[in-house]
Length: 63
Image (cartoon, rainbow, N blue to C red):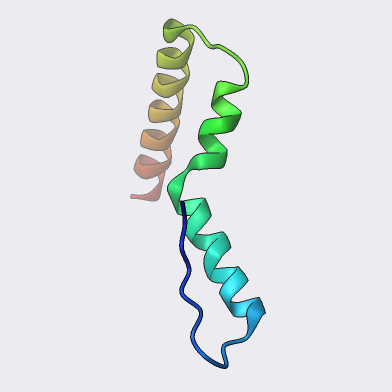
């Protein structure tokens, strides 16, 4: 459970923004979307490998 202490006189919008940021960092929504459908381990590994190659190409192009 995420707990956001609200200071006295603090704007509710600011507290809500802090809550959203903290919730996003937990990765709960991302995990929920991943669990929505089953992906075979080989498919997951292939996607990770393709992403790693792409990132490496970006880094080399940057230099």
